[in-house]
Amino acid sequence: MLFYDNLADYIADQSEKLLALKQANIPEVGVILDVLGPNDNQDMDANPGRHSVTQQVDRLAIDCHGIAGDRHRGLTRPATGREAPLYKRSQATIVNRRQLFAVSPYECALLSERLQVEVTPQLLGANLVIGRADGTDYSISEVPNNTYFAIAPGDAGEPPQPPLATLIQYVQQKGCSRTGRAIAAQYGDKGLTGKFVDHSEHQRGILCSVEFPVDAPVYLERGQKVFFRFPMGCCY
Image 1: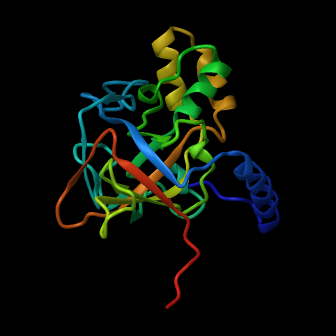
Image 2: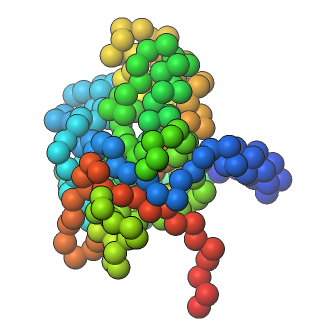
């Protein structure tokens, strides 16, 4: 997690994001276009620059711990350098809200245009590609914080109660050199590492946690509907 230096910086940045949100074409209903799971070697030391790359799978098994077999799976995780303003690295255990990573086709197309190479969901390390049900472009990176995604069968007019699964947007994924190195390795161009970091700051997708299911895993599959829900807050 990254933090603003002060409230004034937060207000200024959020004002810009509200303007971007108006132009982001966020849908009420989306559809899962692709599902991607962990690659066969997630070891950072043994697979430098490529351990975070995902691969297409038939379906993803998820529960409140995250994705089965994924390196981000777990209800808790050790604090990292990202949380350095609050915790010393690896000396605190915190709740894990980074369980799934979702992008839209727009992020991939935009970054491909900016980097002049094909940036696929796999290279970004995505787990879900969520499109609009009407097929038009939108930026999932701009969805408001804590947006709920209620997953439903492909023929559903409304999500069942309970939904097949419920994901909650945690935070926007930022550009990072780790993914930049994976893209650079794919195309044999070390300059793409820094270029990716520069151009992906607000167009990288979102991180989510799994609120439901808890007791038994369910499967996310292509063609399932995604109902976007924008929370106001609790009333009790």
